[in-house]
Image 1 (cartoon, rainbow, N blue to C red):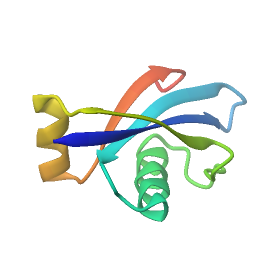
Image 2 (cartoon, rainbow, N blue to C red):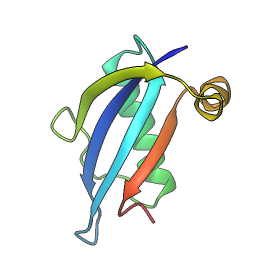
Image 3 (tube, rainbow, N blue to C red):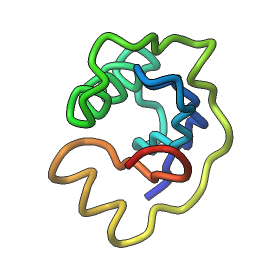
Image 4 (cartoon, rainbow, N blue to C red):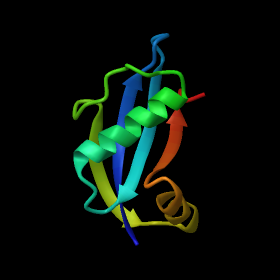
Amino acid sequence: MSAAVFDTYVTRKDGILMHFDIIVPENTPFEQVVGFGKIYLAEKGQAGQPLTASECRFCHIEQASEPVSAAFAERGYYIFEMQGCN
């Protein structure tokens, strides 16, 4: 399955930069990608932080790994945390 990767940078409430990828099935509407990002931010205690096209940009298409495909089946998306997410 092809997956679209959205490179995302959000400033946390304490001023630290979060860097994570929102990975979704290819052709997922951008509004839905942003919605998934907002769910993730709320889970991290960062609800209300800005998440728009300025913070979240399409990066590339890749083949979904097994864990990513499993997350698609369960939640519809996968988050790959890189920096400042914990």
